[in-house]
Image 1 (cartoon, rainbow, N blue to C red):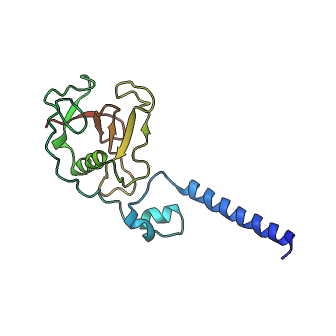
Image 2: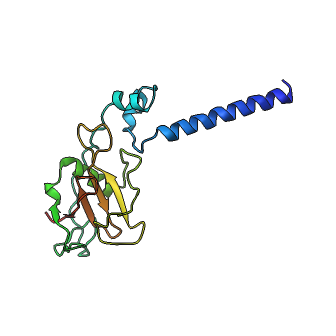
Image 3: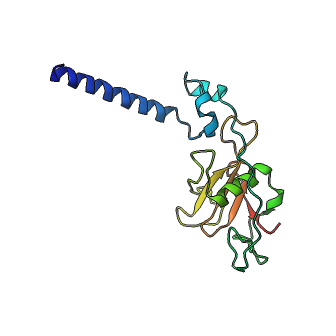
Length: 182
């Protein structure tokens, strides 16, 4: 093979790699199917893989909550009896009143993952200012699986830097702070 032919082959391979990467980026809608379903999608395009891929299932149920440590300091893993909402003007919701999928997501957050979607854990920017104003990077969002939805759905848990947790069922249209005491 001459050096000219090698250069041609190298350029052709490089173009194929770039085209494949561009196709992946352009077809990625920010969601990810659970790992068990990755190999089952059709390779005919993003629309076909969305319709033929299995629906994301709820994360595995979380382990039972361990008993609270002796520490009296409030935090994400030890709800204290003196819990105070981060913003008294924001409605509260008892943890036990959330859908089972939200409880599963809260369990995954407590364990540090793994999460079913690539976007889980990304910075939530609070552009609508529906949560208390904090510095950029303070909030992080996590998907709550919506049964029957072909994508991430509209339900999320958003966590704050000191352990507060918020629930939204309408894709950031409204929030409720999760009360860990009940």
